[in-house]
Length: 352
Image 1 (cartoon, helix red, strand yellow):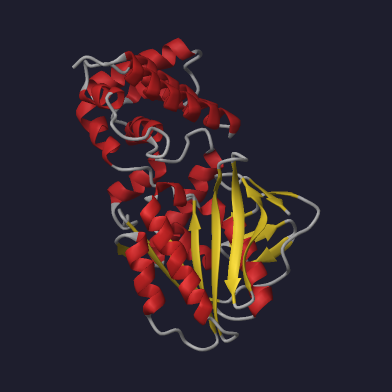
Image 2: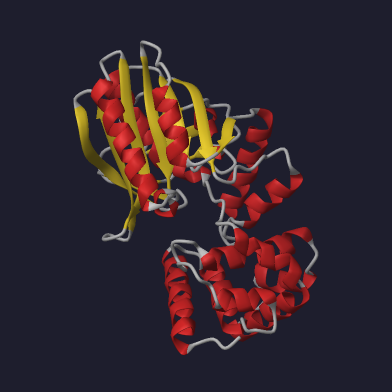
């Protein structure tokens, strides 16, 4: 198949955007791997051909990260020992990395190729720092036990948010004996209120839910973590262990379908339902986004003091190129309030 120069440019531009994003988010190794992939990809492998002839959107569908994760998985499994030079920091320049990635691509093409089928599963537990901060505001505002409804739950790691211990600018909440301490760099003069959200239930949905009991799932989740971010690898491994010990209520399905069904169910008096999501909105079709917004507006009109509704989101603000934390709640607080901005993987929170 002949690849047009316009097609090549579109794909390469997408990869360059991902490379710039990784570099800006302290992930130079992941940037180098993405750079190597787009440099060596050609028609000699199924994977290379599929990348160069990608018929969808490059960044919204996370093509660079789909293609980078299988190399990390091969390294972690020990199947490709030569890749250790990259992941252990022994490859000294981009040319060496290009050569090693190309060799692995040629040898493991059939293993790498299926990773392009689905988007990355990076439901990062570090994002819970921002989400918990928002839940503390909602607890102060409505003083009700919380039922969390999460869309884009992946393996449900963030559905165990109430089992993590937090230090948010010196304000602490959650079980102090948790295996996970989430303590981001706190930016901003203020802190969230010293509240302890009473989370009584969590439910989630994902198009491709992952079961932490499955060994291949655990390996896949860790492969999506950017390899230079060792603290993330450690935290994700611990979150997986917690998910194994505490199974979450996780369904397979479309986010809009699922949420409409959940909101149609009777709500107990003395509770607050909270729609929660992080870095998933960009992956939803526009029609799905509109249905979710309409469903929340309609449910919000029926909310009352002892049956509250809230919406908390950590999503990309495209104009600011930052991840924005926002909340809405009903009754009385239906307008969007921006609480701050956060690192995509939870390293810092800039609290407004």
